[in-house]
Image (cartoon, rainbow, N blue to C red; front, side, top):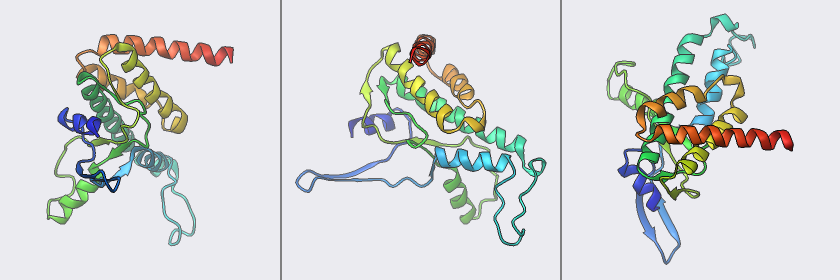
Length: 207
């Protein structure tokens, strides 16, 4: 719980803690409005491939790939991943390492907020803000400023993106670019990240 509170102080969106009942072993936390980054990326990948149409009125026909808004989809994916990079940079610069950065532990908030704005009468698309990404599940987090720990954190994220979303293209590149622009300690962290990646590849080759 301390890690969640610390993340919020660092400017990273995470669930608010409302109440802790020690006797009842109960924790009441904010229920985030939005969807996991995993689900959002999968939907965007289907949209880019032209397979996101619903069945029924279209008699089961799928829209051809050229009919999909691929450039707009790619731009949105890039913006999402850049937001992830900035969030991780804030955590790391604040001395907090997440430990389990997967697309299930990252939530996309901008879709729900856009709906709320429309309900309040604000025209759709009137706000050109960056998508907000929330970070959850700090069960494996630790307090650390070591480049090694930050590098491992980034490596876990890269592996998660490659394993679950390979069809969506090179997702880690915008994460790394945004991290480089946002983190004060980016040089040491990214250098160690590349060392960790190399060690991982050597282990995979050796078996």
